[in-house]
Length: 160
Image 1 (cartoon, rainbow, N blue to C red):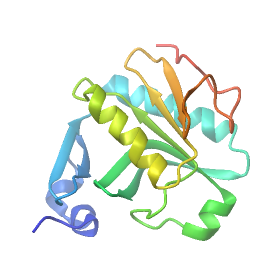
Image 2: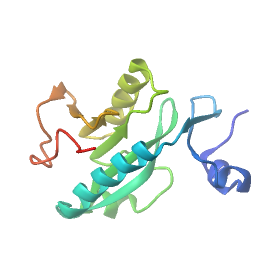
Image 3: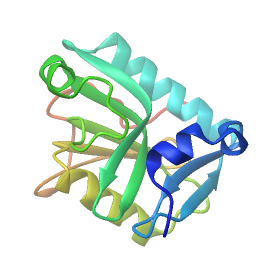
């Protein structure tokens, strides 16, 4: 039997890994190596959301329990209502309104599409995908959008 998310976050061996850790649907650990570029993009998007927070909270490394295991959004924004209902539960059983994924070289197009679908299926209203070059795309239930409805001034390109 695979691991539970509480076992992953409490495991001292896994605590300081230089990788993003997620669980697949069988409870197996999936790791993605972190790069400075990835960290920079994550920081820029978290900073944008924090400056424009619109009565909510910004969470980095936000864990969401999905039908295909625990996935970890690089950045998320939850409204005050979301935080009131879910607190800082780990992992969330419902996704915050905005989940942001920063694409790593190891991510396939299929993996990215699956994460969009999983976050939306767990209640996210929007999923933002930031490519390695800083280009940001926005997705909702009806597919790709030209901008965010929560943050209409969200950047479509992060300066590198």
